[in-house]
Length: 400
Ligand code: PLP
Image (cartoon, rainbow, N blue to C red; front, side, top):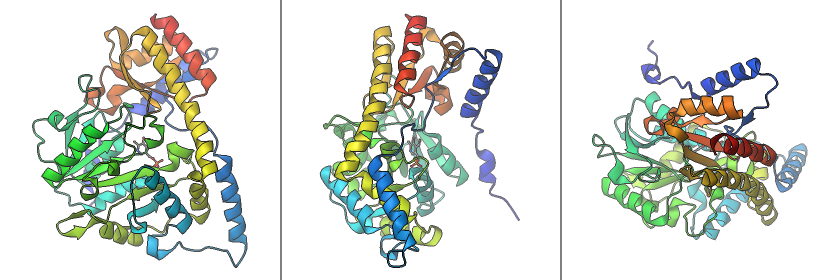
């Protein structure tokens, strides 16, 4: 018996463990200090009332023989009609028309981003930006794929384009794009995405488009779905999540769009994905799906907009603080993440220690997301408004 030795090639991610260990050590040594965490990558606002009510109704359905639900419907890979209809309608509002057989319900974007790789051969080359959400890298290392990088940096506003692909990496088969981006908060415009779509079509590559933060986009000129771009239906798969949109990080629900016009090697990827899901997955609970279906209802959309407004306002507070200090950053406008250049020439971990010790504020060192993250730092908008304001007051006091 042999194990999958690709797992031995995974780099140990010390990032969040080290952040946690340093924080614990500091608090132990200084129990009187109130440390504020602007490193939180999880939501903190409760679920919208419309979601809670819908889930209560679904629980009642499960209590009666006439409305009880077992396994989900086979025809739509276990997605219930009201949920798929609501997603279809939300895409229609973005000007994108989707069929029922193109929308796949899942327990979140992370699993789908990992599981989609079952569809692709191990010899494919994968292109990811540097810095990057670590899941894209680790899932491909586990499968033994070659990974190449596109340079994201201050010059391109952390929005790498095909010309920023590193020299050894000119023919990628799988291209990851995350917009608005984690960790940098930067968001592509239509023209930039069009360049990527044309590039993927030319290379016969497939774009895996992570739209987990699309609800943070405020500017109507910016795309919220890659399918708003002409040609994307022939080269892209889109991953969406209720986690950051509607606070479902603990509830778990997402959806992936695989257009039925997307084929490689003469095979429909939607058909392959349906086959994969029906073999290895048994759907998301009815109660969760009914809660998710309420998110895009008129009432639900208004309520989730309030929560997103709350986080967005926190992001604005942080952005204004950095503006006042003259510190360079991306994000914060269409994203809960603010990606800043460490002041005074510090590297990422030096700035982490400096901020923790002098201002009792914790963020995430950019170097933990890739080599190009060195010298940068991620702050998030998921804390309370009160803590965000206090953290910014301390940062201003320290760096002014
Ligand atoms: N994609 C990105 C870029 C993320 O930052 C996250 C979570 O932080 C996810 C996907 C995971 O989303 P989900 O909770 O739906 O699995």
